[in-house]
Amino acid sequence: MKLIFLGPPGAGKGTQAERIAERYRIAHISTGDMLRSEIRNATELGAAAKAYLDRGELVPDSVIIDMVKDRIRREDCKNGFLLDGFPRTVVQAEALQGFTDIDFAVNIDVPFDRLVARISGRRMCPDCGAAYHVSTYQASICQKCGATLYQRDDDKEETVANRLNVYTEKTAPLIAYYESKGKLFTVNGDADIDTVTEEIVKGLDA
Ligand code: AMP
Image 1 (cartoon, rainbow, N blue to C red):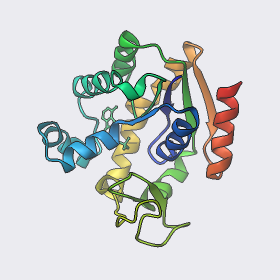
Image 2 (tube, protein in one colour):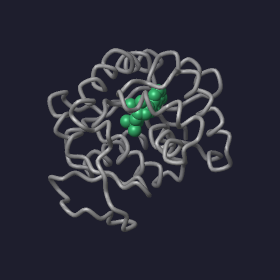
Image 3 (spheres, rainbow, N blue to C red):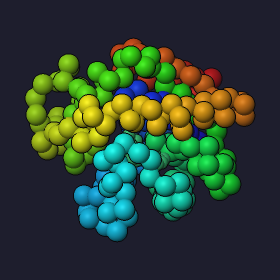
Image 4 (cartoon, helix red, strand yellow):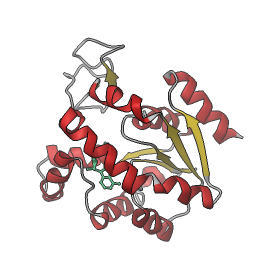
């Protein structure tokens, strides 16, 4: 199974992607996590990507396309994969189509006015990538691995508005793109985490 998760920043893509990838035993590929790891490890790619992430802009298409192309050739993608955060532009979607066929694009829909609160309350684990929200989890330690949680720089208010604009302008057109190919299904992401997971599973199993 080869899946794409679409949705604005703060829709819960990462959380749902982790659950769905585990359930169907496919690789979870988060381009955002890959870039943050490159930045943490001070690689050449990380140094080039950092300024884009800091501003809430997209990393150039060519960089991210090569990164994903390499990643999905790896052994753990043999059973399939779930792309979380890619494609984010029509150019990326066209490139992806050139090197693999995806089965479904799952669009996690959340009303725009809910997103800022969802993003600014988010806290992340730097080691395992788990995400929490201050409204439901106030401790500073990751429940899964014990690392100290942090707030992503680009989750701070000054950058969030730009990320939402970039989403509307560059990524939202992918909803119509995959719909026209008969590959889209949309779930209501403005519900509790388990309900959203169940809705996705129901859609995929059907
Ligand atoms: P995310 O963790 O998915 O919210 O991604 C964080 C940041 O990484 C984005 O704001 C972009 O700067 C960059 N990024 C992640 N995926 C892509 C992509 N497919 N194309 C361009 N930039 C990306």
